[in-house]
Length: 459
Image 1: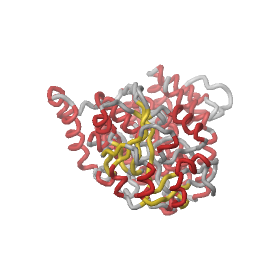
Image 2: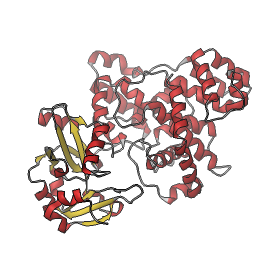
Image 3: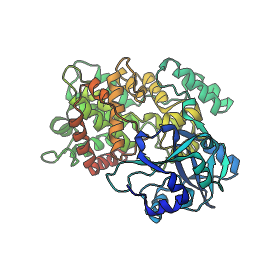
Image 4: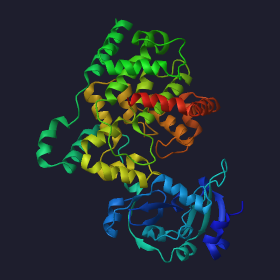
């Protein structure tokens, strides 16, 4: 492949020393990324190792500015002006002031991701000697503003320390007066009444459809949402859905409505945060994507090995509940969390959250689910969804959440950083890879329906 003209011009004489290779085959420690920042007064491009976490607070203190990630629409304009789908870490493509992390200068060679410059092309990287890159960035400011991700010890696997980590984080980020009040309660909200009634219904072997209908109809807002859900084009119900009874009996079924109502009532227990990371899918959209994907994967597993569909769906619906908790428990610091997630979108959110707060959304959510007496399958699925190697109780729920997220992210649904999916992931779950890929292609093709369903949740 020939380099785009704008890239050749940006490289100048250094182009002679460049070799092209598949980015997935390049040394991952040598890959660089360039992040476009703005503070309302001017632009800045920051270059660092791809897997390093940008400490935005440290960078802003050093520069005495208030930079944040450039708005997505502005980034698109910059790429269009350069005639590129993605910008490699070449400062002269924009001509803006540039800052390079000092860890980059310690590399023997660097790899600049070029991306697939046309739709469907493989992701390429330009590899060059480190001295050539230093010459290209000779006029850039050099600072230390990153942390090696491998040095951030995220707790993905040990839930026995979650409570102490959460207590420590709360003490660190709240005033003494509030600490005393939080010592036992952790300021976690009580279980909503509707959800509590549904949990009791779930464990009642004599429960009938009328019991569920009564619970939902006692909450007019919830009842309206369930009827709207059943009426959506996604389910293409025959005839008009006129009541909760219709929604349960003719369209959705007892199990689906019970878990849908549970997810809705819990999601409404906390306010949606006013702030959010730009470029990330919002809470209810993420919930629907993951619920649908968990349901698909559960139903495709071999009989006798597959998890309970309703619990898998509920785990997907609540998988990101910890995000709402972060906003509630750490309100003064949530803005920094959002800004840091924006500039570190290629790194899993758990790394950023642990670095800033000492706790992750998955840990917080699992603590609350446990306090509320939620089913272990849901609690453990949410807690270990980022742990690829988790083998403990209810591990199948965690694994289908992990796999669903990777499959959706690979198809352009912005659910966070992506990881490669090895064949053994499919083998462990008894899934046919090609059939799963086809099902997820169909799911993403129905994006408008998913968005409509998420919109109903927000009402």
